[in-house]
Length: 108
Image (cartoon, rainbow, N blue to C red):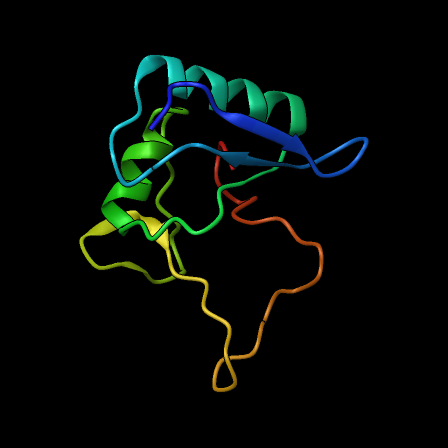
């Protein structure tokens, strides 16, 4: 896969789709720098059709900085930093309105 990512803005102010990246593999410094700057510029990025494991998600997220372990929500097996937010017919959304989490800790 090429080192050059394709960043496609999805609107005039926020959001972009990132293509040309396989996050199931470790990213080169160049790839990560492009992804990092896309997040800074667009605030929200979409990495479509990435079948990553919780361990791979954790590894990618750690490149952005320290991770938090949520004190209440269940986490992925063996990866405490990845919480499971699952919505389906037997588990409808319980916090689909604006909210903030863990404001009771020193650094939420």
